Length: 465
Image 1 (cartoon, rainbow, N blue to C red):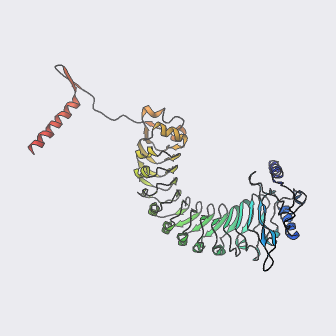
Image 2 (image 1 turned 90 degrees about the horizontal axis):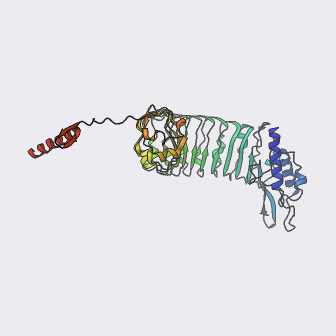
Image 3 (image 1 turned 135 degrees about the horizontal axis):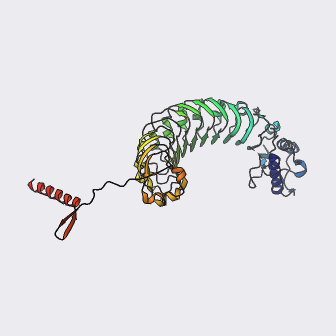
């Protein structure tokens, strides 16, 4: 019932926002009847609850659902007449700002998509294949000479191997397949898509080793293979993607060393290798040679070792995740000195010891600081203003040696108790008890008297020397 209501709401919003003017400009040539009929058939396969031919009876290049896009192309040879053709098919109601034709729970892939639209540049499906299994299509070799974007987002019932879907798409810039049931290896043919700028294959069921020769993808800016079942070593060819801005291999089963030639990715801003099985000894030192980094996440890899002094050139970093890595030793004060723009810092569930660096109290832009479940001790260096600003995202529990000054215990950490655990009150420093010495009308403290005597002895020795 809830699903039906959802479909109804999407459909109502679609009808209210999409029906545009039906006036057909007589000065423009109409879409040929075969191509127009193919659009209707594809729309019916996506959602047969709508009478598409009745809602949009006129030329679809003059009046079409949002997401169905035309363009005009000059004829070949001496024929200079411009003719219209379908260039984009976008399905799945995203929002009122992107009210594409809504999909039904029983959407299917009509084979006409891959045979009737010679000029198609973009094919987009959002939450279309959600209940009824739809096999990954075997795309004919003749399709895709103009295709630039092939996007499937949150289609869990799209199942099968990707091998039959990849053809000689020489113009393809974006290949996005996320949240599907697609399985198996990434076909080697992907390495021939030399125009690719984005390869996102996240949250699927891919497995096996990543044998893809990435060196050919010289234009690639985004590589996201996260949340799959890949295993084995990461190919060294990954270091040859000189244009790469984002690299996300998180939540797989990659093993071996983290490739050191990642340091050659000097434009890289986002690096996420977290929750794999990498076994490099310690935090990679080459990170300190990548000043363009803005986010680095290595959590869940048992790299061990101490946190190195690599932060001097990384002042632009906004997020760092180094949780559950088996890190030991002290937290370097340099992290507090150089990481002044950091918003998220996660060092939890390691074996860190010593005090929290006083410099951490000056991280003015941090919104979440997680130091839970280590062996930290000593006074917290955070001011009332600092702790109040972060609130419950200052996470310190599981460090039984940490303490807070008594005068700050109720003010500084008010409202943060759940994330701090039970903080003890710091003991006051041991000072000699003042003992009074009476002599005439003057009274001095005994410990001051001893200090004066010591200074006198030192002065006498200096004169003798």
